[in-house]
Each structure stands twice: as C-alpha cells, then as structure tokens.
Length: 122
Length: 106
Image (tube, rainbow over all chains, first blue to last red):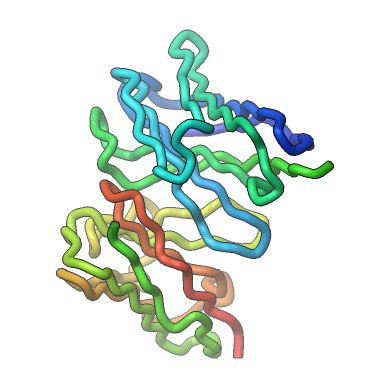
C-alpha cells in the first residue's frame, strides 16, 4: 500500500534552516510528483510547491521563492523540503503528498504523509 | 492569481442531515482540476473528490461534487458522525486552496 512517512518534529531558532524528509513506499516513486503543503496552528492549508520525481522539475509558491528548496533522492524514494531563514510565522505542520497521476504534476494529492511539526522559536 | 472562497465558514448540522458546501473561484476554473479534501483534527487531509465530481478511491457515495466555471459544490447527502470535519477545495494546477468549511455537530 502507498505510504509516505515523514521525519519527526523539529524546533528551530529564527534564522535557522529545517529539512523535512518524506519517504515513499508502495509505488514507483519516479512515476509521480510530490507536493508540500503546510498548516499553521488553527489555520487552513497553504500550498508550498511541488517536485516531479521523474524529471526533477520544481514549482514553488511565490511567497517562498528564494527560501525553499525541494529535492528527491530516487535511490531511497525520499523527497526533501528545506526551508531557510526561518521566522516565527513558519511555525506549522508540514505535509508531503503524492500527486496522484502518473507523469504529471497537475494532479490532486491522493496520499499524504502524517505531517511534521516545525516550531520556530527563540 | 485565482482565489477560492469557501462558504459558509461553519456549518452546524445534525447527523442524518444534508450538507451543502460552496467553493467559489475568483475566475473561471477548469472543472477537471477542482478537488475536495476532508481533514479531521490531528490528521492529514484526505482526498474526497477530484475533477469536480469524481470520487476518490474508497470514498462513500454519500459524498458528491458538482459545478463548473466559478461555482463548485460538495454535497454530503446524509451526515454520518465521522463526517464532522473541515473541508477544503483546491484547484490543482494553480495550486490554490480555499479557506475551508467546518462542518460541526449542531
């Protein structure tokens, strides 16, 4: 069965960086894209970007351009999201999700990771 | 940038009642790229509907989606206790989420 397992909770100081991992199993990793979505406490869902695991293309939310990098390691079927220059308003649960159609990133997110809480606090 | 506005913000209903949730886009959206998700407290979102009206795998048929252009609707025909949650619409391709509708027990 398809599973996305994310790395554990992180506490970071303002200005630091965080790198969240998302290990996929149960499907051919390189056939699909991975999106990243975050949710601040008590707030709605915010799309952060996606990476195509088959060609490495990325698309980032404009507000995060320059601070976010998404990568994949196809040898371990793992996706990564790194966010730099952290601020307090980056405190959120970060989710990875599979983009559910083969070989396209224009797809709904059909399987989700369990979420990773990133807390930014001095 | 397309903005998705969901209404109402909160819907208070009883089990067995019908729920009608709205998602309005600031400009015309391809219905092929409109999805609905359900999120319960402490859980990741779950895909319910894609392509505006197609149910995702394993989703009960009491959930249905409809609409086109700028107006889309998620309908839950008869609310079950497990349906009380927050629902989000999304236009994938433009990567936008609506603000969510909370369906709570009246």
